[in-house]
Image: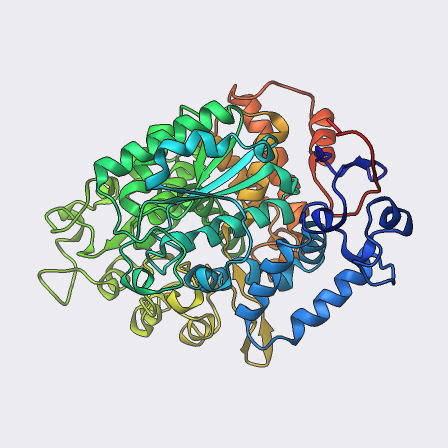
Length: 572
């Protein structure tokens, strides 16, 4: 076997391996397919196993894209790309990086949601690690395998809250795989440094348990005490095996996401993507939008529809940004109107969770409001009385932004800022077409899932996807290149502010709120520089001059290309 070169900066590196024939072709990280040269085919006993024509990476990319575009459904394209990733990683990432704007909705949201739902149907080859509860005593043994020696980034899920689709059990592995594909495709993290992990603690999804094809542990989810003990065993094993790893928590249920992050954020380098990355990209979108409106952040009146872990993360991020701009804590909190299951979160309302208390309005604030019901203050009531300038949806409820509510908002705001962030597309609070229709084309829109451009009065208006893929790949690159020991809130603030600075609206107020997806590698590099610099300022990374940091970031970013192979002794 061999140790792979960890960066792609030097395209002239040679790789030595003792794999031959089928073993080499079946290794996804080493396989080149038809691009093996004549010399390599002779050296590695590949003649006869490959067709005689010798191709190039460029030709392979063109061939795969032709096949991909011929499929009828996005799920078929997703399954094709997953099989390509398990067959030839270099080719997979060449296809992805050269067509990011076209393929990100396939590899990631929204299609990855169906990929998780149907994960058991298309599972073919091992990728990542399944840590099931019955094997809890084997966690350290499983992670000790030598193929994981170079791992620097882990994305872990327990599959309980996949996007807005709920409990998908072992199918949640699809989201860990998809996230890490973007760490490499957008952030340039070498693929051998990434490891998707599924904590299989059972599932309460009856359809999954009843499906004879289901690949996960056929058991209802374990109790909370057993769950917490299992997570602790996992973290302890990760600390021992990968002391310098970056661990990302992904799609955990609201009751677990925040407290797991709070428990472990000071023990290892870790963050929760749904809470922190989502907050950073949503805040960046709001900042870009208010740059268009010419107003100040502290002057916004912000409605949060849904105050689960993602919604709280966004609200807290924006609150901190207001304080950083000179507002007091009380002034910043007064800008928010949070709506949950009991309607507006106001003192005395039933069903308010303890973690939501910072965004509960005093009863005196609403005592003079004209409302339709004495028992619940609805979204329409808030629109009519608070006259908000921004509404952000993380509710997971399709159509929750009603026509009446949006029209009421547009009646008193010149350019309403509207972010229906729930995904996949089927769970979006509203469609961009409806939002433009209901606001006479005035709305500034960011969505959680991708939408096609909208036609409005003869113009084609592109819709910005407020996707956390703008944030986490750059976070990963900056953390690894700087050698950060922990992830601070200020590092996410730096990421969000830098993304806002990269908004095309700074050059053209009629431009898009966020950079185009095809520029994601440049965006990730810029965010990585901001994150690494903040890590140094926070004292969680060793200082280095800015030119040295830039050089390190550039050198770290892996580019998909084939390197020459030679036989010989094992390469260390």
